[in-house]
Image 1: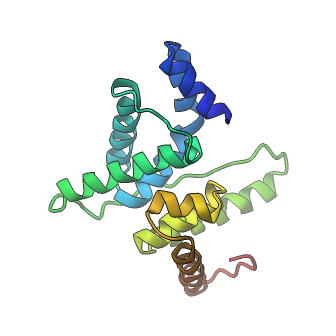
Image 2 (image 1 turned 45 degrees about the horizontal axis):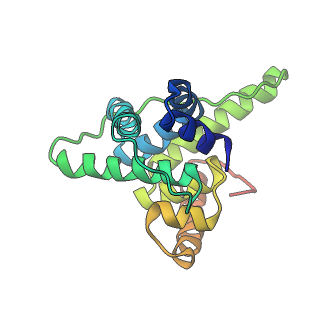
Length: 185
């Protein structure tokens, strides 16, 4: 059992710090993931808050069949899709805030270039189909394997492999049209 699952078990046993630790662990990653689905930063934060409230109030029972992370991302994904269904006519194409993920490196020039690449990558990812965004985000930003990605997205492993291939192709095409060449896309 991982640290996150241990935190949740502690919370279920009455230790509120367990839930706080889960929020600390997953807040940023889940926000980016949800925002990639709903394309609205404010709504993504609301959905994330609702996801954590569901964990706190309803005290879902984590059964351990999948990793805690997979289970939590599935809850968040379902909440995001429910939001889209409820707000189908209200959704706008408002610009989404850029997220710059900085490492702890000391080389300012390298850090600047990495930041610029992150910005361009995020811009390109916003242009992808929602399924493409999700599969790339889960696989590369959350380091999830194909099996866990399939569980979250409700697909087979084969479908995820095919989707991942298509998503990378689409992202490569978008990046090339924008004038960027990445060897590892």
